[in-house]
Image 1 (cartoon, helix red, strand yellow):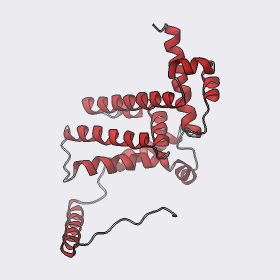
Image 2 (tube, rainbow, N blue to C red; image 1 turned 120 degrees about the vertical axis):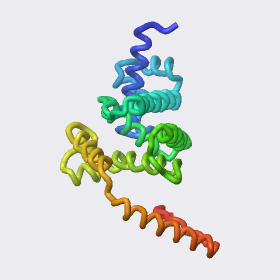
Image 3 (tube, rainbow, N blue to C red; image 1 turned 60 degrees about the vertical axis):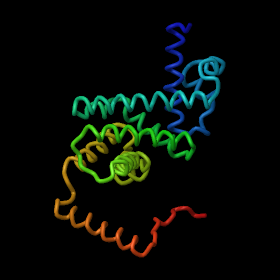
Image 4 (cartoon, rainbow, N blue to C red; image 1 turned 180 degrees about the vertical axis):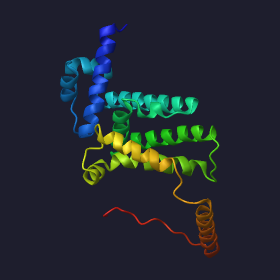
Length: 216
């Protein structure tokens, strides 16, 4: 049975791992570095998590659960205060970094995010002809803000991954989401144009694919 000090050490290790995984990537953060940052021995880290992969699994699980908790608070209260909780910034950056490594675990995490988004969407009055695409694209747009941290930092002249730049980033996103960028007429015209394009492709039995960004 774990003592209170064991549980505290486990949390310190997890928090240190999330910080280093975010900063250096999974491959760049060593067991020794994480243990040192947490103020524990490498042996104690292995006692709690077994290996770096086991530690990463625990970090992923905790981060996703915490984000889900914040999302649930938003759904139940209708306010977004929880979405900008003090730990939200660090967790968002960690999850994006985890997704960037292209691993099956990262893909599974995004799928879990989409599934939770679909559950959230079902509780709202938002209208969409394709709920899964709606939440998947919305999730990718939100994560893109953190993926492009360096570019946004250069454009705004301050680090958007730290305070107060992060607040400036979130404020801008709130202003964007709080008001429509298209009139109902413009949106309707665009949707009809998409429908016509889709019908023409079906009629020609053709297909179009977005060009790959790969250099291969």
